[in-house]
Image 1 (cartoon, chains in turn purple, green):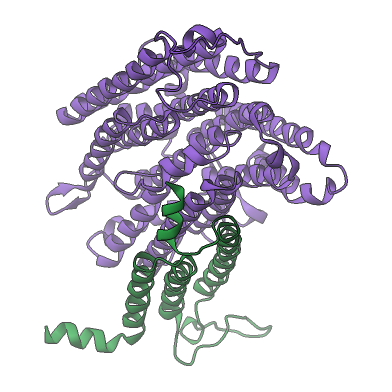
Image 2: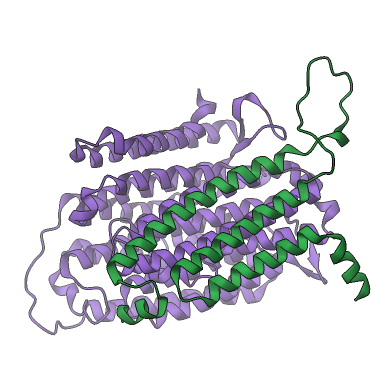
Length: 488
Length: 125
């Protein structure tokens, strides 16, 4: 039974999502309850799965008893288990939070709940897939639900959802082309199998071209600078109820898919013209971390600022996983988990500010710190500490391990980039706080009633940001198990 | 140069793939009309599918079904089924994408009364 947990994790939201429009056709009011229940069940399954992986080590799940390379396999290792638990945790909190800020027309359609569940199932598939083509299918399942969710608010969001769709589908197609190239060269799609056959073929242009296509496709999906242009507009205009979930999962899970491919297929010794490929990837991460941070600094809209912050963190994670040593790799993956939770928290706060005060720009939030609920201020401070990366939050330990890894690899420019992006992060939070605690222009005065759902979701997420810091040693060691255990 | 030309002439289906791919990307980037952008996307996706089919095509090969009583299996006589399976799945994904994108385009048209990207961006300001 315990070995079937990953597939259950996929099937539960998928079936509930697909049957939602039929089951609730006459009973719309049941939608939120069913969705919440489904995601809660998912979270429990993900925790059970985490426990199984913790005690038994990585497990390969073979569909229908056909083992790889003939059958399709899923890999249930520590990276997958942790990211799956994070995704279901964030999904659970986002749905609780979504109940508070959801607009009435979005609430009325059962499609919103269907899409959330289908997207979650796509993400779960993407996390566990150990087969290149499976990654493509789940990438598209998650992305299609994502396009529809961004556009669900109507109005301006429709145009940005359409742009997201054009770029995202182009990314998916590039990825498919890359898979085709690798299949031509090796005759297999299974990652473990590919890892065995590829090293001998690294001089082939088909393999190199295929890997470049795959990287290009996935970097559109993970919004790596300079292919990030769809993200800020899409997330700033997406409905407040879904923005936390979208922002915290879509790009991160695409990055997880790339990390799996990079980790199993690109050895540190692989070079292009005497430059190791990993170093090139690391440079791309450095560029993304610095430019993303700088772009966040010049934004005046809260959601856009946080979106660019997320883009710069994608760069940080890419630096970590491309250093070519265990310290940097686990640091990067740990930071990825943190970043998923921090992004969710940031978009929850921005959405709650907009919902209660109709404020979305730095000018509009001026002086809110004096009149708004202390809960929002508290959560904002906790997330800011984590984003800047001060102990005892999880953000600190992730960055710390990335820096240690960079020092170990003697890549001093990467160390500089991590610290510089930290300073940039500090810079834009300074801007947020200087306006937040400024003297109010007008006497707003009204105190808002913070509902229980918001209280719960913001409280739990702030707590988990700090808790991750205390658990960091444990999580990092658990992630190392996947590295040392040769998890593909 | 002569050698490159020789290589190209020998692989007409890959030349067609490159032309379709670039053509599609050009349409996506250059046309302001949203539906034409979609057509461009569709051509790009079709070119990827064409690529998958092109490399799996084999002269005089048959479907890989092993009948009862067949002693030796000669792989040369069969077409590789896997790229075709990939193609079918990719087509399904393509159709789903097209469905979502047409829904978005029709919603945009109802909201903005135009399909021209420049006019819509003008209204967004």
